[in-house]
Length: 244
Image (tube, rainbow, N blue to C red):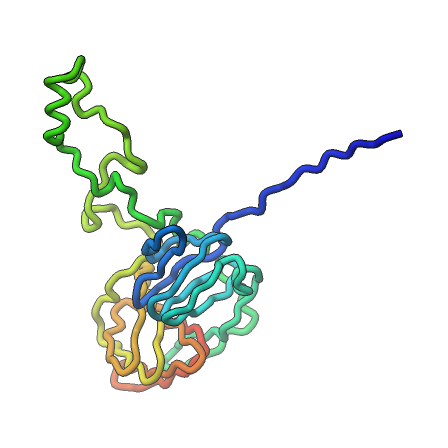
């Protein structure tokens, strides 16, 4: 008796596994052409990316990956994208002293990121009729009725400029604000995050106003001096520090 067994092939999942936390220069999506990925975007296993400067990827299992200028990776091939673990020692700053967090579970990070990675063509397209639209309107059958009813571009039909959009609690590139707390980056680079999820990369030999910063991520080899209320706190990576 001949048995015929049907084999079904399941397509590997390409669901997002990491997010672009911060970058000192554009992170590029590689393909037929290179496109700049917006900070705060979700990244999927098949995405091939190339860093143009210090970049922090935050994976949804709790691990992070630091890329430097010239690094090129496939997101799904990174160990950090496959595991559920916290790889950096975590600390909290209390009364200007660092306290290590022991056995703290990984934070849920996926909700911090958005699916929108590139600005759709419709966001920058003009809604005003062109001279070609007017020619078609007056010299083609039913032209007036069809005026302004051209092919719909991908994405929303109207999109207000960034400063008018409603602020949403997603990771995004933005200013840190102002305060009396300062940070001097002594070596390498550091990633900063504010209470409203604005992120930035702080570069070596620079002095920064930390403003509303609540988190600093120091890769291995990074060093900095935090100055608060006239007192100094030395920070040395690798570490993930909550400031408040």
